[in-house]
Each structure stands twice: as C-alpha cells, then as structure tokens.
Length: 502
Ligand code: C2E
Ligand code: MG
Ligand code: MG
Image 1 (cartoon, protein in one colour):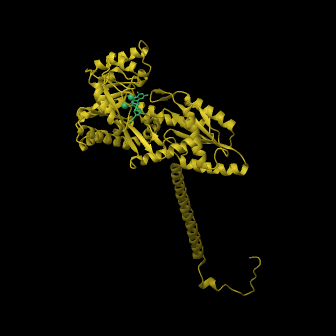
Image 2 (image 1 turned 30 degrees about the horizontal axis):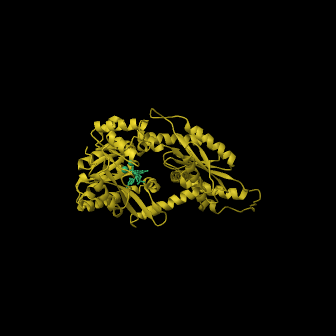
C-alpha cells in the first residue's frame, strides 16, 4: 500500500458501478468458508481411507500369520520354518558360521491320544509348544511340523551349544503335565543336524535331523543324537523299500507259504497257517519280519492283508477240492487291519468268491493286537465270529491280557508263544507256565496249539501236558503249496498208528 501512488484528481471507477464492498466482503467470507469446508471434508475422507487401509493391512497380516503359523499351537509352521532356514543358510554362508536344526518327536504321543482322547492330546501339544518357546533364545525359531513333530532352529550354534540345548529341552519336556485333570508325562527324542557339515540345503538338513531323531528313538528314546553319515542310508532304504512294497501286490511279488497244524503228537493234519513272503527282485526272498513293520507303519498292510485273505481262501478251495474237507486255513491279522472298517466285508467276500464255508477260516490275532483297542477289537471280532469264522489268539503269553478281557473274546484257539516252547525242558518254569496256559485255555473252552515245536522232547512233553495241536519245524516247515505235497502225504501216513483224539 505504501508503494502505491494516486495522482491528484484520479478516481475509482468501480466505486460507483463496481461490486459493492459489503457484498465483496460477504463473497470473500463465503468463498473462504467453502475452501475451509472442502479442506475439512478432504481431510476427513483421508482419515477414513487411512483407517480402511490400516484395517486392510491388519487383515492381511492376520492372513499371512494364519498361513505361516500352526493353528493349534500358534508356532511357525513348515512354510515359515522353510523360509527361516533359507535365510539362515544365506547368513551362515556370508558369515562362515554354523547353525543347528533340532528335530523333535514326542515318545508315545499316540498312546496318550488313544488313551485320553484328542482333546487332552491337543492340550499336551500346546503345553509342549509353550515349553519350547520359553526354552529357546530370542532369535531362535521353534516350529511345529504337524502331529507331535517339532523343529527348533538354533542360529548361530555350535555342536556344544546344541547338545546343551537339546538336553535342556529333554529335561523340560519330561516334567509332568496337567491336562483336564489328567497328570501326564511324556518324553521326547531329538535329532541334531549342523550346517554346513550335516547338509548344505534345507531339505538335506531336515531329513538328516530326522534320521538322527530316529536313531535317538532306537537308542531307547528320551535322548538326543547328532547326525552321522550312514544314518540316512537307512531312511533312504526304507523309503525305497516302501515304494517297492507298494507295487509288490500288483507285480505278483507276494507269495504265501503254508505251515501244517497237526493233532498232537503226530497228526493227522487239521489245516494250514498262511505265512506271507515277499519275493522281491531287489531284495530277494524276505520273511515277514523284514517288511511287515514297514507295511504296518505305512498302512500298506491293509491292501496286502486283503490280498492274503483272498489268496489263502483261494488255496484253501484248491485243497478242499483235492479232498481235504475238514482242514482250516489260518490267516494272521495285524492291528491295523483289525482297526480298518472294511475287514468284515473283505473276509465275507473272499469266502463267497471261493465258495468256502466260514468254518474253514481261522483268523489269528496276537494277544497285544487284541488288547490295543480292546473295545473296538471286541466289536469286530464278534462280528467275524458271528459270520462263522474262528478266532485264534497268537503268541499267547507275551502280552498282558486281563483274564476278564480274555473271557469276553470270542476266541476258539490259544497258540502258546514259541518262546515258552523253545526253553521247554521238563521241570523248569516254562513247563509250569504252559500247564497254567493249558488249564486256563481249557477252562475257557479253547483249543490249545503249541507253535515252534522243534524237538521230539518238546513234542512228547506238550502232548502229555494236554496240547491239542502242534506246529513247528519238527512236523513241517512252512513251504509253498507245491513243495508241501510230500509233507502232506507223509503226515497223513504217519498219523495212523499214533492217532490221538482230544
Ligand atoms: P506267527 O503267526 O507266530 O507265525 C509263526 C512263525 O514262526 C512263522 O514265522 C514260522 O515260520 C515260524 N516257525 C514255525 N515253526 C517254527 C519252528 O519250529 N521254529 C522256529 N524257530 N520258527 C518256527 P514267519 O513266517 O517269519 O512269520 C513271522 C510272523 O509274521 C508271524 O508269526 C505272524 O505274526 C506274521 N505274519 C506272517 N504272515 C502274515 C500275514 O499274512 N499277515 C500278517 N498280518 N502277519 C503275518
Ligand atoms: Mg500266526
Ligand atoms: Mg505265533
């Protein structure tokens, strides 16, 4: 204003015909207020957008967390662990440092789950996770792979630090738990793999830590084990074997051998027991103890067992047609088969397919199999028994059956475990045990079979003690049907003079 100069006689043209100053003031006020209002609205909108984007972020983070964490325990899951492992490998490469992967598997968790239910199992897993979290250092990762398997990534770490940590974990996990008024105890086995010497990649480190964990289990559980080269050879071999076993049924590599059961002491024969063999192009001729555990742990025992039932019935039909009208065919069953819903139907349809009366089939279950889930087993065994199939209790004397349970089992036959027979010499404890088993079995109305009879002495004594049926190398070794022709004739001939009926 100071800089402006107005020459004399100059006048403002707008003063009379221009905007009225009053209106100008009003206009300026209105426009300014409008500008303020718009600014206010824009800033309010801005806050809302911000809030919206924040909550979107939150939801996103929650989703990521869900995808990367285990639902039950909230520990990092396999995906996040894999990422952390990858980062750990990068860091260790850069810094030329070491880190450790600890693979944990609880000992006997399945038993707790079976006995107390999943709810208690879940509570236990949560508490174990909590103990892992409080035991580890700030930057370490404790993850759950699923089931009762956990991994702790110790970074950085040396063998010494890892061993001390593993021991601390074992001691912590071993402390008692309280879950829904149950006091529980559980132990854990730990396998340790150290980067870089025990594996260069994430995959190698994990399977080697796993192999070391298996080793810890084999050494009696509740301990830790460092990975050593050679340990995973076992794992690879097992995986390979499982693959091959999967194809064995289709490739006709499974065969049944049969071992006669004879009336004590010498015959005649009452039937056969089917014993599974695997004629593998890769591993040679394998007896069941070489591959049954694998078949059971992988669930392959169900299709394999179904094949056994069918094949044994087929062979029984062949022998029946050859005139052996009163023989029975015994088939061994695993616990997994007994727990599988289809068993009764599989048995029924095998009998129908080969037009066999159910009385020709005996199903052998070991005492411990029958005890595993006593009530469920009882139900299935009752159904099978109602079908007309006989039930035999195999390897009797090795489990810890309760007499009450035994009484409820619809079993017709007791097979005394080979262990007692092997040691059998007159006058020792085994004789007393066998006498007791025979007395017990007879009271329950069961037929008594002794398996693993190898000597004349055993044969004589068992007959005298009252065993009805004998089975063992002395009488006949298990063999393929063709190889048994001679044995069958021989047993029939031998039977005549010393025929004992019980
Ligand atoms: P198990 O049912 O108790 O069968 C008796 C085992 O003792 C057989 O071994 C037989 O060959 C062997 N044996 C028989 N007599 C004698 C003898 O005088 N002396 C000796 N030292 N041994 C004798 P194998 O064939 O190796 O079968 C082992 C176990 O595998 C069987 O024990 C049975 O529990 C299981 N098993 C066999 N076949 C099958 C199957 O098809 N399915 C299932 N689930 N298990 C099977
Ligand atoms: Mg058997
Ligand atoms: Mg047996």
